[in-house]
Image 1 (tube, rainbow, N blue to C red):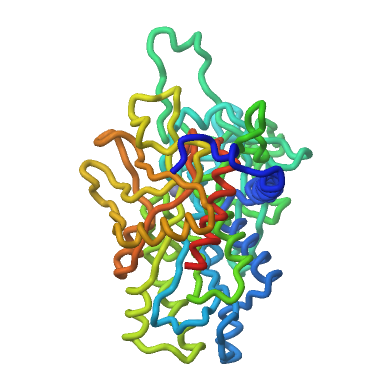
Image 2 (image 1 turned 45 degrees about the vertical axis):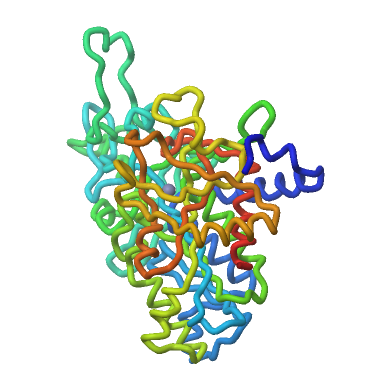
Length: 452
Ligand SMILES: [Zn+2]
């Protein structure tokens, strides 16, 4: 295990491979700021790399065999990729699973209102945020609106140089001299306009904003059948004078999603059937039709087993029971600015490689998937064989915090699961920081794991 930044072990060639990988990652992060945008990106990359749609395979009753690549998308917000292995699936699968939802502000179902000559959009925040961090930032609106006739309108405002941005105002310090004003969830209202439409009698500014919505073919009532996410505007960038890090929105957990996607794309003829999962709703408890608790993943595997001529109920259960998984989610990195809740010796550190959390949870490991030492020992062997740099870590001091991932859900099938992901500074803030070497080591780790 590493106590130094692993870049010290890299050859010039490896550094340039890492830089190229991180450039690709920044492009992904800059253009994929919602679940739907991530799934569109992943689908395109999968199709370009020879994956076929499970729906199409089912329609054609196509027989699948070793080496075939399949994908299935769930409601545009979750996805499974599979490469059929040499061994029958009853002997177990290799899973890597990450989540592609990130903390943000969602528009309410009836969001547009006017107050004192300004038009604002009412929001409900999604996931764990520190509310004050979302004020006075340039924000962008990414959304999908579905009209009554089923027509889908995707739009983004606030990313292109030609667009403006939107945002949330904050009170000047001079008016907080007697009492500091704490930002509440209900205060996170997005300012979007101030120009009145003088043809109207009342709510003139709101009327003008609704006219702009109409130019996209969106009526006010259409905002009820919509998913509109307000996120930080701008691209992911190199961070630091030495450019050793990356700052970007939504790195929890799109950094692990991207690293596992790239590992999966390079996989050819694995021994065990390999599965890459991208799930939604992790930040709000993995619930719902597109979260990890959904039957979508299990059902997709059953369909693929069936098309391989390997399905029966008992073999399906045996298969999941004998599987192995890396629950690939980020963890908090040690922050010298805020040492109190962190144990320096056991915390993940930026630059020391992919971080393994044997358990997460809080207050006496409550809610944790505590990975088995037999599994960890096998992993150590594989990681060392493939020269992967890693660190064994925890998140926060005992009783100081903790967190959850999707690990415990998959462990429920009886499979071996451990959390493995990239350490992050300012986790869950609008702009999160990661280390380039950790991103690259995660990709190398997922590649090695698929060969296990
Ligand atoms: Zn996460």
